[in-house]
Image 1 (cartoon, rainbow, N blue to C red):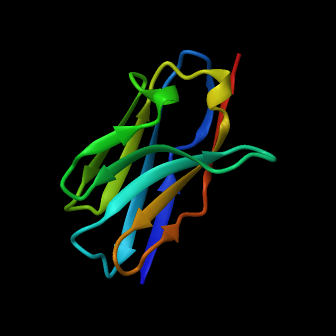
Image 2 (cartoon, one colour; image 1 turned 120 degrees about the horizontal axis):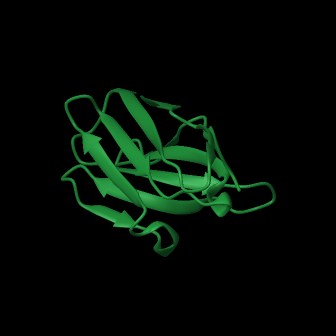
Length: 116
């Protein structure tokens, strides 16, 4: 069983920065992909960024050049550094874990609000 705990959301002005963290605990397979998704009211949950257990990142076009995903495998934690935030980045951000088993685990979500 894998559990995810997110932290780091909050309120920031446009142009500001926030750093999200997601700590995984439990029986964690060495091969996995951890990701950040975001979802607004009445919207689908969209992929923001992913990182493999080997450290290879990928990003949605909307955040390329502004967000950086990283991970610390010793701490089983991923991070999302969000810079130059825009009001349209306002959403609930969810951490996601994917492996062969367990196949999919979601965190509880953390609110990010960017004021104009």
